[in-house]
Image (cartoon, rainbow, N blue to C red; front, side, top):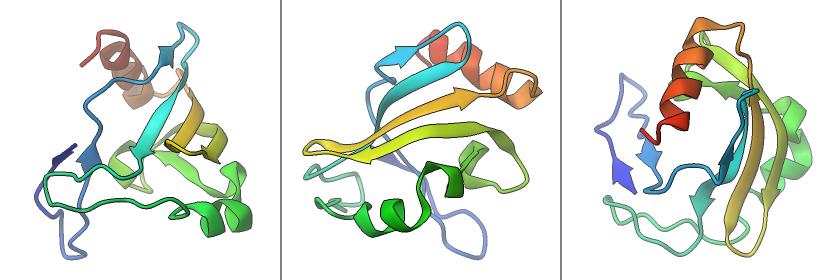
Length: 113
């Protein structure tokens, strides 16, 4: 994973997996791992099994927004499934292709960017 410098006053940190999602459909449907367990990122953080369990049980996919760069002003779709398994956090989402930003992201994902 590659870490970006903290963003804004909240000190939020974004991290990226080195692999693209496992599947990216023409219709905007995608799936893959959003986080992998036991792998140190550039900041030496390691996500452990169980890290997402409580939030997933409490909120579920419908309670977690699919946002561009975690920005609540930029929704780009919705989560269909969020599952913690033995490897990490597996996600399935649907980009809203009626939204310009989601179309841009979809094109980049399809190209492997």
